[in-house]
Image 1 (cartoon, helix red, strand yellow):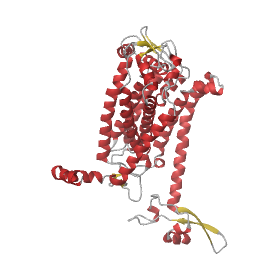
Image 2 (tube, helix red, strand yellow):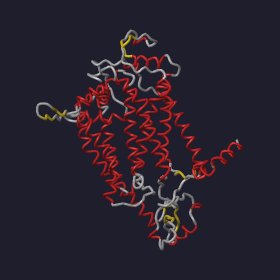
Image 3 (tube, one colour):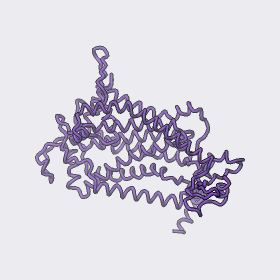
Image 4 (tube, rainbow, N blue to C red):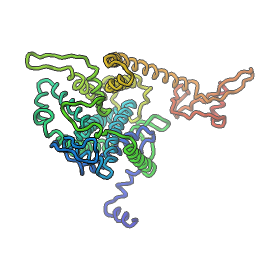
Length: 495
């Protein structure tokens, strides 16, 4: 091994190439690992998807089922559904791999969302990283489209209902909706080619685009380096953290093993997408309590809450009410996400480089706006299961709809005000630390017979003339008398 490494270094200057890469510094905070969680979930998706593709038949040709699942014996179904049933009951490990694949898809999208939230709330999208923010938004869009395509492939009653809803959404688009629907389905819904087209998108086109975006995103992070949280050493001109090899490499490898192991356990113990309970898709039927995966449930909830608002354009064209929550709302949401870095830069007139992440409390307007949008999003997800809630709690569905409509109008602004207030209170607490020092929890008996708490003043930074200009950089809070620095105790007593 040593001889091979020496030969490679002699011929290709490998040590010169690898040394600066192995010395690259990565932040230590746990929140920076959500991007890696998405990456390892994506790797799991590729591996399990390759195994499933060996046995899946993306055909809508009809056949009569004769298999080990007796409840569907002699049922008419497509070859796509029959091959998924064969995967679940006849292929060794097929059901386990199917469920791992589905859970990995949900974790993948969730990790991207949480990663984007971390970037948003800490201001890591600011110059010079605007392009990587835009790439991340497109990755989220492609991941959602990829999840929908894979979710629809089994051609079961639940996924078929979702494809039918997609057809209705396309038909609601003015002028081009009918043509787009005929182009996608090759005629009237459901046609005979939609599953094969979704299969091609799912295993070739969309994964290829995702791989390209992941490569560009990682290259951007590698070249521009990570942001880091403010601290005693963190500035705009350096990078604070652990070196890539060996500490960060060991941490990353451990995360990949834990991610894969957790997904395997979830696939083995937690049932997801039991198509054998739903049965094959029939255009004249719809599954009760049918909800899509969580990342598409917002659109379902928005359509349930939106009032009837039909606009007739002359005698030939109509804009149905479903167009606004299913087409306009997602366009506004993702359009706002794409343009937010540039809008904030315009409003704040901030033109410099930003390598130090911001604490959410220090930017109350942005933090409050983000919480308001998250509240709106969460309410729409809850609205997507209003029929389940109404059935479980015996509430009339009409009342649930009105509760949801009032909620999306009242709760997001209320969340903004509450979050803004909390940020201001936290800022006030930080100012108290600057003026009085860190609370130690230690008390001292004074000569007058009363007790006072000892505070540990902050040490001034080099070049700072007085404590008035000192900044709170996360000094550890002492809990025992021995933890209190001598100089700090003396200053506290002098107070």
